[in-house]
Length: 246
Image 1 (cartoon, one colour):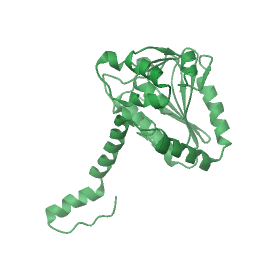
Image 2 (cartoon, one colour):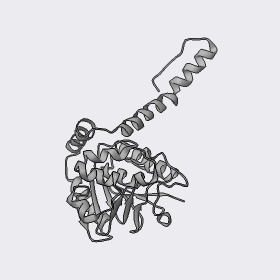
Image 3 (tube, one colour):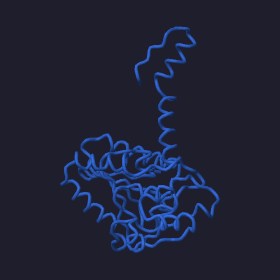
Image 4 (tube, one colour):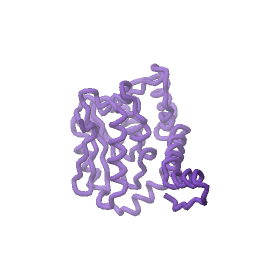
């Protein structure tokens, strides 16, 4: 099953979580597919704006799929992929657990009027820790209410506290996101990229879990490198290594 649908409308990439029967719960393969789609967006010069959304109006996502737990960091903007291009999140229905982390890390967010945001980790007895980054994106006390009291936040309150930019009638979130994407196409890409770089790399602090995930990726890249293979081969063959930085 294609767990992530990708469509390009000119320079706009639309990436949709696609398992509505399971509330678009993020499984291991879904996280990997989302990461690949967004990494390709990052690399392609002809694509300038991305929209992350989901199929159906029941749920943007119910969070991590406990039957097939993902490496959730792969699906998170600024962690699993780092495009210096605008990323918009369009939310309909329930946005639960890791879905809040995914959405809050996007540059802009629009939601349908029936959207609800719920973070239940404190009731489950397990956390990945990335929710801590919410305190740098909305007022501290509201972020702690969501994370510690596991209170459900409806669309209207989410807009009031700055978690979302705009609430639209149910079913119209993607259409509004496309409007914003079209507006962004009229902006200077280098300016957008530099503003985003300064915000994400120099202004908004990274939480410990976010830093750990980024560090883990860097170490994995070294472990999987051609240089490491060459170093092991050279050691076994008792010869000087010939590294080429790959």
